[in-house]
Length: 280
Ligand code: PAF
Image (cartoon, rainbow, N blue to C red):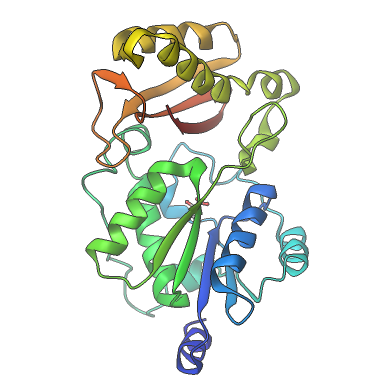
């Protein structure tokens, strides 16, 4: 992979990387199209497909994470992807024979809350693997999805802090008709859970409605949380993991919610955990 990337660099051909864990859906394909717009016809698009064990906790869904390489490859071909990088674990984490993989990348500010609090080892795995993918594919551009808002910010911070010369862009979330954000994990939802999963997007819209219905477009965080929690409780399959309102740049939580505050939430449906977010 790196040899090819170096050849591209020498030839002056820009690379755009779209990192994924496979089981590609319309959300991923929109990232690929965004990569093409960014890099142009002269550039090349690399899609990485790698289910990174380091970012899954011991009790999480590593083994049940959907896998569909054959269809993914066909989809990438259809979308005009130039190269798919689908390494095995051994290639990613045992690349120096006889030596342990004892180096990790940790972002220690904005990765602490929300996904980081709920999944303590998660972001260490994400930043480590994405840093490795950057080193392997040497991209000028990398595209991430807005559904993982915190992830994109953590990766941008990492690239800035470590002087990695890559421009990170974030492409909008692609949604199903009822507002559910597309995610590879949606296929695990039972029909009743799938029906109720629209509650994530609905909650964001509900928060916007409540905020803008308020005088001065300002609302106390406790009051807003209570209202949204009540809304979620109406769905018996949904179990709220977290609901946060925060500054979109610093990720600090806010006491008074105003226009421009960012909202993010994670909700369990059985064992399936879904996330969503939006600007109020
Ligand atoms: O968002 C994802 O699919 C993964 O976290 C990523 C960025 C591909 C790293 O494994």
